[in-house]
Length: 274
Image 1 (cartoon, one colour):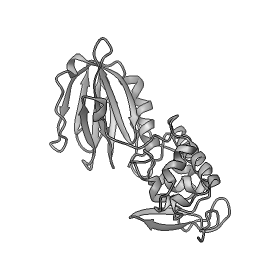
Image 2 (cartoon, rainbow, N blue to C red):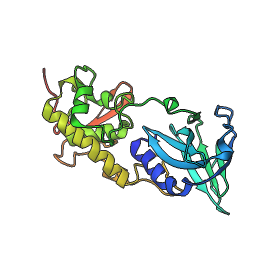
Image 3 (cartoon, rainbow, N blue to C red):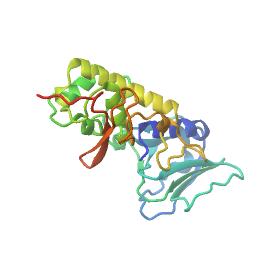
């Protein structure tokens, strides 16, 4: 599933070409997508595209700049967004589930497993609820400390709570904890002030480095035609169970927490007894 770095990469790639475009219509070809075209769409222009947690939001405005609404796209497991202009053709194993047609091109939504969603929100209150963005100015060590405080949940599942901190997925949670030298089963509320500071720094550093690498392509992620992420080449623990730790040489371990695979180094991330 595309996580924060992958979604941010897609937004940064598409935003310059779709911003300012004037829509003609929204065509939905898949009955699983319940997203009727709003009446104001043909009279609008795309004011901006931005990331909202793990979702992509396209903001539409009237000629005078008044916001009319948003189109929110959740890619889920296999969703992809491509821009098509002129005679360019997009090769895919299935037709697009939906197409936003503009005067100068098309924004195509492909999704092999048909798990992604598209919704139109008329007000800001209608945007999907999400936790604090870990790359926003509002996310600080003290903010993170307040979210951690009193929680008995292990820190790895805590990082996956989209209602608390938005955008961190399974790949990056393991990498963040390795860099912070925190055991994944440590209760979130038991982190020391030093560990909390290390966790905060690692969250921002890992996510920013992943964005610089255009995300991770573990299976099928592409942010453009035939363009894939590179951060999988930098992974220290994720998917490396049975391999030596790059820092200490110990064997990387895989365990399962709440149905999700967790990878860690038992030496660099030692368990703590309470």
